[in-house]
Length: 180
Image (cartoon, rainbow, N blue to C red; front, side):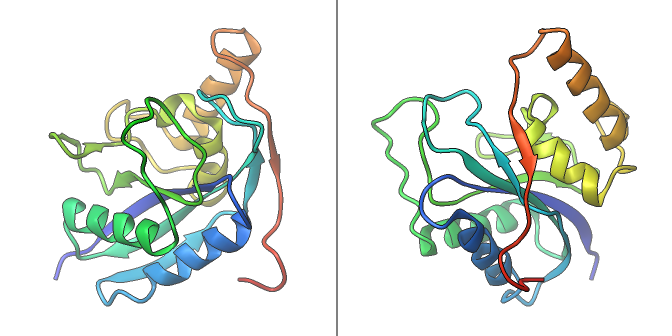
């Protein structure tokens, strides 16, 4: 059975964020069709694109799966629900959340339909995705722009320094206890 290397972003700014991200990561391992490969260290980040006083804990994980992109998305949404994610359809824009699991890359798949866009369309402007991704896969090449994660990260940092994009506060942290 064919498998794909996949990268997912994990984020939380409500409750015990680091613990919640680790729970989500461990729940992924419960699926037979998913093998965990690597988990980046957590990064503490200011909210981007939303008004909130609660900072986020973010990470990126790499896994291998025989699932389709849509089947993996269903797993991610199920784990979010199991960990208390409430999606309020009445609010417009980003909201504080107990857990957010986003499919960033599914191998080299490029696709867009009414449910899923791959690669994730906003990863190029989000240091909270590129910084942890850089720690586990700096040489991974984006199938759309054909740049490595390392090069995309440098370009984003340059755009932030040049004020082409808003400043993004980010600090590396560590997982609580002997988590990994």
